[in-house]
Length: 117
Image (cartoon, rainbow, N blue to C red):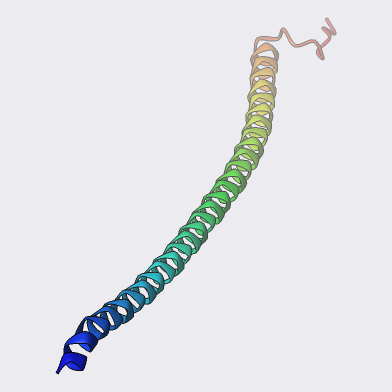
């Protein structure tokens, strides 16, 4: 029995060593898994940031195009309005001049009439 008693501490130490080694491997696997998860999280964050940046850039570009189109439309509308008002003003002035000539002719003050008396 002496040999059994002598081997028990040896077996206990051996089991403890195996348990520590196994624990060390499990801790290392846990660290590796944590590093992999951290890497994936960083990669996902970068992709999300990149996507958001691209989306923001696209929105800015669309807004700039819309602004440019609105300015061009406003400029065109302003030119058309200006042209219309100018033409209308000329017509009104022509009509007023015609009316003034008609009144002058009616009253005998017209420049085109000469007295033959």
